[in-house]
Image (cartoon, rainbow, N blue to C red; front, side, top):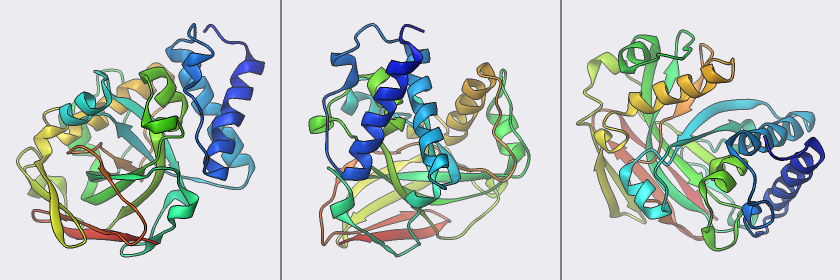
Length: 262
């Protein structure tokens, strides 16, 4: 690590205040180009500590930048990982207030819910599928705290991978009943299709993103607990939204979920 604890705490507070106040900031590596990957995740950990201190709870975990489309869109080549607290959850078909966000975008995802714990290193797709209780459609609302949605990998990790809101719904089904590589999705905005894709867009198989998360946590002495909701990462490029937009994700064999922006 390159940053001292005081600096890490200050940067976490800066990013957390930006989210609470719905205002942007310059990316933190502009001020601290020396920071490393451990610093980035330490800042994310401190943001989680701040949220838990305010009485929030962890609602799930997430992988980000897991599709080749997202990596190209954001100019990065490595997945990132973060968390979701319960204030991020939007009911299926519910409303998301634009005034609470900076420059939101939506991305279609396959959500996993575990029935047994997953721990790395050495976690693989087979272990993930064996540990999965069910999968279902999910939409993540990402909202980078960085100006113009411009960031590098360390900055976005520190910013909890742009996590903001999420919704899950549709029909929950065991992963064993589906071919998650070929499963097709359609993302609609205001009734018009705006993105198409298949599960293989996420690291070749959505479960590979969950395995990568388990291995990441394993290197830190942590695991994915049983009963954890995990968003496996955007299947397509993110789509910008504004007040008045209605977004629906339809997933082959899993039904649909959606939300409205007001």
